[in-house]
Each structure stands twice: as C-alpha cells, then as structure tokens.
Length: 245
Image 1 (cartoon, helix red, strand yellow):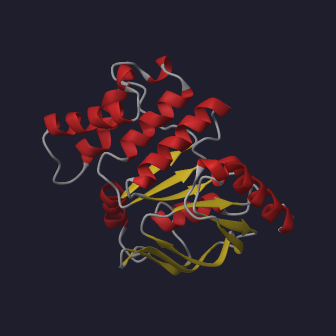
Image 2 (image 1 turned 180 degrees about the horizontal axis):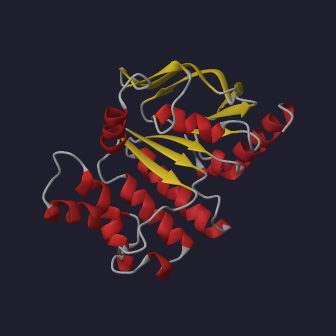
Image 3 (image 1 turned 30 degrees about the horizontal axis):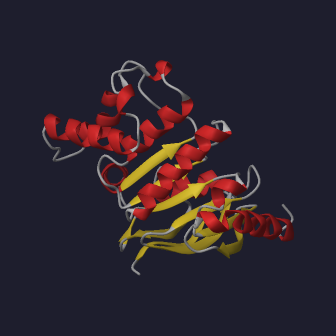
C-alpha cells in the first residue's frame, strides 16, 4: 500500500508539539481527544489552512509547509477535499450550485456542462438528487452535510479532511453521513477525520489520540465490518478509558 501522507514533528504555538504519523492510501483515520487538545489545529496545519511553526507535511511526496500561500490554496482546491461541522454554504446559491462552486473556481476548469453532470452524478449516488434546486434553509442537516460531501468530491481529491462532520447532526443523520464516508473510502479516497464520537470512530481503520498537542496513542481496527460493530465500539471505549479520557 502506498503512503499518501507523512507528518513529521509538526508544532504550532504550543498547541501542537512534535506530532508525527503517516497515512497510507485508502485509509480512513479518526483523530480523537478532549476539547482543546489540538485536533482541529492539527487538521488545518496538515492541509495548509493554518501555518505550522515547524515540522514537515508531505502529501504524495510534495512538502506542503514550505509552499507559498497561493500554491497551498491551489493544492487544497485540486488535491484535497474538506467537510466541516459548520456546513459552510453560500446562502444565495441553491444546493446544486453550491456543489458545483469549487469546480467552477478550479484552474484549468472543465466546461460548466461537465461540472454540472459531475455534481448531479454525485447527488444521485448519495441520494440527494431531489434537493438540487432547493436553498440551504430548505433541507435537513443530514441532506446538507451530504451536499457538502458531494462538493468536497467534485474534483476527486487525493485526501478528504473532515472536522467533526457529524457533530451538529442527530443520530439518524449522523449514521447516514458516516455511511457516506464509508462509501467514499471504499471507492479509494483516503479520509482523515476529527471526531468526538466513538461510534463514528468505530467505522474507521485506525484512531489517533491527541492530548495537549501530542500524539498519545494509536488504535488499529482494520476495515469496518458491520457484524463486528459492537465489539469495535467496546474496544474503543476500553482503549479511551485506558488513556484517561
């Protein structure tokens, strides 16, 4: 299996302290830890959305930290996908246009007709075709988050970053969204996800535990199998308890 991401001694303002780990292509990894432990800062620093003080981040061999802001922005647009707890959509655009927006902004963009066809294909695949013409205030939280996932996949990113993607959803909507992530991952997209939810983390291949800006533990679970769901959740609970959380 090819390595897609290498993080080496990443530090920032005392929030992150010499964090190092690797991610293989096709993995789905959860980052867990108490509030204020540095999880989101880690995600943003890895993706270049935030500037680290020191360390290196390599995405498919390309070192990200040293790039100019313009090159980082272009890399995020073309090689990375993002899904956040706060579903940042443009309120003046309907759902379809929100999904199309990043692809329209991309350098060397395709024709609008091709972009629209890609967006509609993703919406159909994830079961939200019926909301294409609706505004963000006219759909449920689960539908809107799936639309945000569609938007993140428009340019077929090499890696998808998700920051508490189910944090604002009820249990039913959260289950639908995490199953959407499983579909994306099974198709080959690497996912790095911050979550507080052990049930969400149980669907991941591996969990990294962050405390006070340091990597304190790692738990390997392997690929998700619904028949083993309860055992995976119990294993995570016991592991987190052993770490004092």
